[in-house]
Length: 404
Image (cartoon, rainbow, N blue to C red):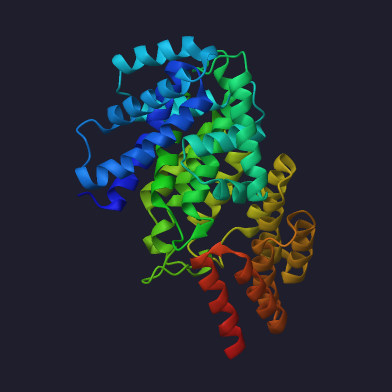
């Protein structure tokens, strides 16, 4: 018998490979995803009591292929696809994990899809994120995101453009969506939007691995280098982000001797070389901010003026309210907490009742010496986050202020 954690981890790794193989052979992403999902359920039922087969990827592809054949037999209009699936099942049942995950990302950046539908679809297919996790990343309700993903699958089914790896000329056009998927995948791994754990190392490690693969194939692209630098510079802090019992440790309080200096050196070198090319993009700007943090010996000596300037550049590039919220923290460090709170209010116009709005406002009220307002905001943030570790941290902060 195989334990649930082992089976779950293996299926998470193999799912995008099986989906890529089946979608590439059949040209039908929607049906391939449905078939692979059924194969994953079957694998869970079979592998736990009987053990993992010698060729688990081949097992998944074969089972999913048979499910597609069964479904296509009920639809005469799809008879030609059934023949292709039969042929595929009888031939290749292996795939390269590294290549197929990356291939799937470029395949999902389909010209028939808009970025707002292609990116969530890719996060589901490659990252294995739930609809709830994807909705949290896009700041939309879960039902809205479920509709987007369903619409994307229907668009692919009806599109005349083949679901296949783009040629060299088309690939740069799809790159922006691919990079955004990798960015969101890393973020969900580094700061999990829900659940008992602060991070999911499997997701952030996979995002770094895939970004390295993109960088290896496009070494002269400054934004690819910038994204890889951002991931490395951020992930370098991971050893110091949690305390002995898994509790969240904010950046200002982290033991910087525990940061991974090898990753920091690599990240700084990457972003420095990228910025010298003279065409700054959003990932390079974020990496530059991360580099300033990582090279400072402590919070007090951090180059907050430089960080504030970079956030202003980034805000103009992205028009992202989360960037505005981050700018609020930098503004408070440079111009005082009152100025920072005014910037939080700007972000709140678009972010509404998001827990991070309350959390940042709480920290700034604490800096300003308004204890009652800080307690109220910490409590408000704690009730709105789906992350258990964040909730514990926010609740503890409120309790400490009450005792003070």
